[in-house]
Image 1 (cartoon, one colour):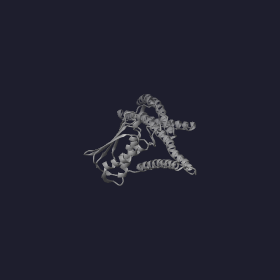
Image 2 (spheres, one colour):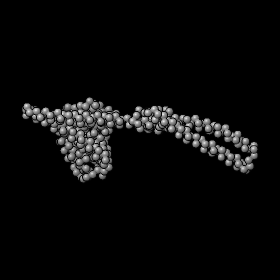
Image 3 (cartoon, one colour):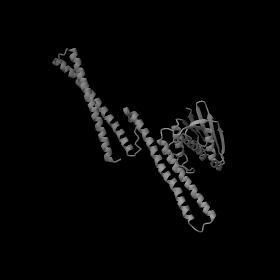
Image 4 (cartoon, helix red, strand yellow):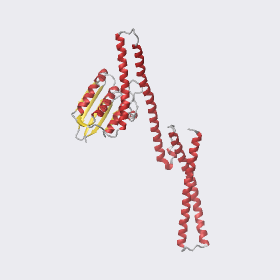
Length: 348
C-alpha cells in the first residue's frame, strides 16, 4: 500500500475517533454539571448561596477531571483499534489479503476483528482460486488449440499415409471435444448462477434418467476396469430433466475420475415417503476434511498433479443445481478410502 495513502487513512481515522470521544466527553461533563446543579437547587429550594455554589464546584471539578482523564485514555485506545481496523480494510480493498488483526488487542472491537480476519481468509482463498483458474483455464484451452493447430498443419503434408492421416484426425476430434466440454461447463455454470428458479419442470422417471447416465459413462469406467454396480429403486420426480441430468453426470463422472483402475463404484437411489436419496460410493483416492470443505468452490481440484482432466467446475455445478432444487448434498471421505456423495431431494 502507498505509504502516503496509509498515513492519510491512519491520521483521518485517528482524528475522527478522537473527535467523537471528545464530543462524548463534553456531553458527559455538561450532563454531570446540569444534574448536580439541579439536585443542589432542589435541595436548597433554588436558593444558591456562595457556600453552596463553591461546594458544588468543589465536588464537580474533581469528578469532571476524573471523567476527562478516563475518556482521554479510552479515546486513544479506541482510536488505535479503529485505526488498525481501518488500515486492514484499506489493505484488503487494495488487494492485500495478509493484514491479520490481533484479537487480543481488540477490546470492544473483538467481533469486528474476528470477522475481519475471517473475511481476509475467505478473500485470500478466493484470490488463490481465481489465480489457479486463470492458469488452469488458459492452460486447458491453450493445449488443445496448440494440438489442433499442430496436427492440422501435419495433415497438409502430401506424403502422409492413410493410417497416419486418420490418427491425426482422431486427435483433432478428441481435442475439439475437450474444448467443447470446457466451454459448455463454463457457460452452464454462468447460466445456473443467473437463475433463481428451475424452468421447464415436469414429472419424469428419475431412475431411468440415472440408468441412462450410467450407460453414457460406461466407456469411461470400462476403460479403467472399474467394478460398477447400481441399486436403483423406481422413482418419479417433478423437476427439470435437463438440469438434473447434469447433476447425475457430474457426480458419477467425478467418482470415475478419482477411482483408480480395478476400483469399485456403487450408484444408489432410494425412494422414501418424503425424500429421495441418491448416493454414489467409490473406492477412489479420497479427501482430507480440508479438501472436503473446499470441493464445491469454483475451480478447486483435489488432484493437483494434473493426472485428472478438468477445471474443477463439475462439483460446483452439482452443488448449484442442488441449491436450485432446494435439496441437500453431503460428502463423506477419507484419504485412500474413497468418498460418498449423497444428494437428498424433497418431494413437493
